[in-house]
Image (cartoon, rainbow, N blue to C red; front, side, top):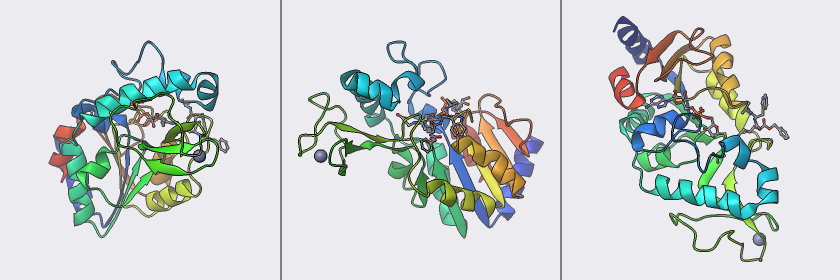
Amino acid sequence: MADLDQARRRLAEAQSVAVLTGAGISAESGIPTFRGSGGLWKNYRAEDLATPEAFARDPRLVWEWYNWRRESIAKAAPNPAHQALVKLEIDKPHFTLITQNVDGLHDLAGSGRMLKLHGDIWRMRCTSCGSNWPDRRPTLPKLPPHCACGGLARPGVVWFGEPLPEGIMKEAEHAAASAHVFLVIGTSAVVYPAAGLVPFAKQSGASVIEINTESTAFSGSVDFALQGPAGELLPKLL
Ligand code: BV8
Ligand code: ZN
C-alpha cells in the first residue's frame, strides 16, 4: 500500500505530532460507536440523550443510558491503536493527543499528554454545588446519583449545546497549528468544534493522515486517507 508507506515516512520525519481521536478508535475494544451500528440504546440516538434538556426532563433515563455505557466500557481494554499512540508519544519530542472520547481507554493505555474535549464518563459533577469527583463503579446502585450535598449528580461530560472546558480548544488549536503531522483516527468528523481541528491543521501546514473504516467529509481533503481498522493500520504506521 504505497499510501501507507508514504504516510509512514511522513510520520517518521515529523518532530511534532498531534492526534484527534473519536469513538472509532475504541470500536475494536468492543465499545459501540455513536453513529455506527450497535450504537443505539433503546432506539435513542446520542443527540437525543446527551443534552442538558434531556437530563432536565428525565435524569433517570439519561443515567440509565450512562449506566449501560459504563458497564460496557468497564469490560473494555485498550486495543493496539491506543497502545500505538502511547509509543508515538514516547518517540516524538512534541506530541498532543486530543480526544473526543469519554471512555478513558487512552488513560488505561498509558497516554499522558491528553486533551479531553468532551470530558470523562468516569467523573461526576454536582448540579448544585459544582464539586466534581471520580467514580469508576461499572454501574451505579442508585439512579440518579446524588452528591454528598444532596444535589443531583450528572456525568462529567460535555453535552450537545454545552461549551467545551474553558481554554481547551485554544490548546488543541495550538497543538494542531504546530504539528508537522496531524493524525485523525476513528471519527466521523460531524461534531464541532472538534471536527474543525482537521481543516485547521491542514491550513496550518500539517500533513493530515486519516485512519477510518469508512470515508468521511474530510477524506477528500486530507493528505492520506487510509481505510481500515485503526487497531490494524496504526501500528503499521509506526
Ligand atoms: C458547542 C460527550 C457551543 C457526551 C459528545 C458548529 C460550531 C459549534 C457547535 C456546533 C456547530 N455545529 C453544530 C454544533 C452543535 C454541536 C454539534 O456539533 N452537533 C453535531 C451533531 C452537528 N456541538 C456542540 O454542541 C458542542 N458544543 O459547540 O457549544 C457553545 C459555546 C458557548 C456556550 C454554549 C454553547 C459540544 C459537542 C460535544 C457533545 N458531546 N460526547 C457523551 O459521550 O456522553 S459528542 C459525541 O460525538 C462523542 O464525544 C463522540 O466522540 C463524538 C463524535 O463522534 P465520533 O467520535 O466521531 O463517533 P462516531 O460514531 O460519530 O464515528 C465513529 C467513526 O469511527 C466513524 O467514522 C466510523 O467509520 C469509524 N470507525 C468505526 N470503527 C472503526 C473506525 N475507524 C477506525 N477503526 C475502526 N475499527
Ligand atoms: Zn453537591
